[in-house]
Image (tube, rainbow, N blue to C red; front, side, top):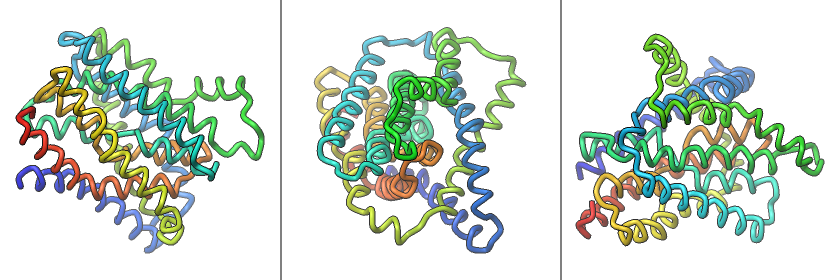
Length: 313
């Protein structure tokens, strides 16, 4: 019960901010121009700052476990590759592919992950290593997939232009800048870190308000089938496939909890901003975020119960 209450407390603020966005839009306090400006700001400034903070604020170099990072890396890249291949083969709607693939694999590993693990064990444990192993891949592949699948005005993607657009993406640039800081335990002066942290703290609330203001229920209902399938993959299927493998390799307690967060936490809010800014299906993305966040309180609690019952957590 305590795990359920904590899960609800972790996810309920997300819904409240989404509802706030809808209320503000209905009351005409904010409008479409505000959401467009907010989306650009979050995509170009706040999200890169958030990723930089997430990757650099924990000293991963001193407790680096190469095998664990490699496991997280391998599971992530295998999941993305298989989901991408199956989506290309079976999904008919080209406009939904990028949003569906991203929504199916991209966890809120950094935003919710550290909080969950700290609650369970009073320390973040292996979470920073899990973040190093999966978050850069989440974002790099999201940039590539969304760039390839985005609205190009009916033109076929030009590989040279696609490569340039990928390399210019602010999310990817922030990762490339952050990784040396994270692995070598380098730091800016504290006043610079505080400024970056302040900017980073604006990313999630602004993105959630924008989701609420832009959310169109009738259109979202028409996309319920891919939303349900992506939510099932995100919350149930990936964890079902890879948690037993993690147990087989001997991972327990904090290591396993970090992997549960990586595999079974809700789709990250930042995926909405990236989908909208690359010409992909923002409505489908927001639907997946809302549904996975709503259901994750129950599914994460269930996973914790199962893993505790088997004595591995």
